[in-house]
Amino acid sequence: MNFEHNEITSQVTQMARDFAHQHIKPYVMEWDESQEFPVHVFKEMGKLGLMGVLVPEKWGGAGLTYFEYKAVIEEISKVCGSIGLSLAAHNSLCTGHILAFGNDEQKNKYLPKLATAEWIGAWGLTEPNTGSDAGNMKTTAIKEGDEWVINGTKNWITHGISGDLAVVMCRTGEPRSKNNSTAFLIERGTPGFSGGKKENKLGMRASETSEMIFDNCRIPDANRLGNVGQGFKQAMQVLDGGRISIASLSLGIAKGAYEAALKYAQERQQFDKPIASFQGISFKLADMATEIEAADLLTLQACDVKNKGGNVTKISAMAKYYASEVSVKVSTDAVQIFGGYGYTKDFPVEKFYRDSKLCTIGEGTSEIQKMVISREVLK
Ligand code: COS
Figure 1 (tube, helix red, strand yellow):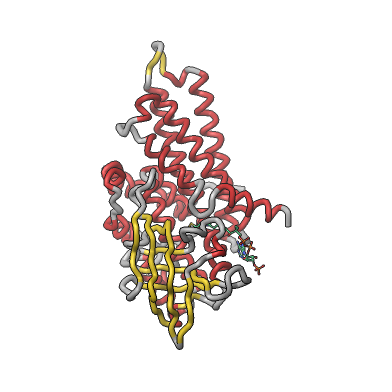
Figure 2 (cartoon, rainbow, N blue to C red):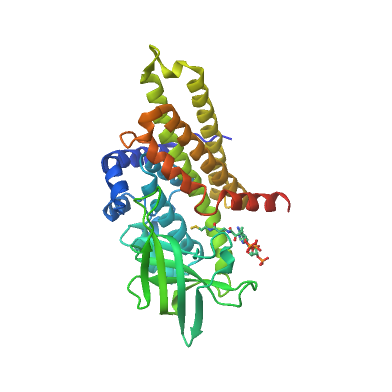
């Protein structure tokens, strides 16, 4: 299979790379230290079409394919994983859910705002006690006349405080029964909807992660996304696509860490030679390069299947699982190659190391990916 960039993919890649170097790189450590979520950067990315990469042009998006989407997330994440993560959550989860399951009225109303970054999107599935067991959610939506009344708390939500619009999965049937949840669109400012505690995280610190709290929050039935009872299945399909973006995020981090380590290993002299001339270091670089290449090919394969409208449940879980584990391993080895300097904030690899760990957890842990993959291969 030929996955070489065509002209459009090359141009989009260059644009994202230029943007990352000009508008993100100088501020990465400042945002990391302060845990600032730099909303203005997302507004700028909106002007370039990066906040609606997969959204058709008629709704204000860039109308591109998963190949360009992968390239964008990767280029941004080579410089800052936090910005890559927020970009992925906005594009794949909130916007992607509406694109896949919204009716025309909902698409016309919300997609142009999201694709241009006039609004930042959030997506709420996880709760304090239902992470991997996502179907067992406690947040309820109860129908009263033509309205739904929502009560409960979502957590680990990207943009839970700053998001202008949230797609939220709520239980509308009996606990543990089939088809018992439904997706809703909830706008910021709706009475009874508020952001909660912001998490103080190991990595991905410039990407806002917080609770979303619903206290007798009333929304019209027009804000229901798709049919009653389909929320969990919709969420699973959205995550099938989202996991391609986490694979791309993982790849960006791995490539950023590898490129820094490769350069350093050729410059750093010990025993009167560059450390790259020692097998202990050069074999590490060989492993890093090989594993990145393999993760890249798996992710491209997932993009290809998704572009063709195929079922990506297995391949996206494989790509996410493998690329995220590679990301942790490569960034760990990069710190090792940098030695003591790698352990300081003067060099970028300690941040890649911290950021990479989220990739094996968010949008389903590596253990959940193995569950998804094994279920598919045993079908
Ligand atoms: N696409 C479409 N439908 C799917 C699906 C998919 N990828 N995965 C499951 N479904 C459907 C199943 O076919 C089943 O339908 P029926 O009831 O008609 O048979 C239904 O959804 C329930 O599926 P299942 O029984 O497999 O659900 P489980 O409760 O066993 O959960 C896992 C399955 C563990 C895979 C799921 O809960 C999961 O992915 N958990 C992790 C969630 C996650 O990633 N959270 C992180 C969010 S961070 S943004």
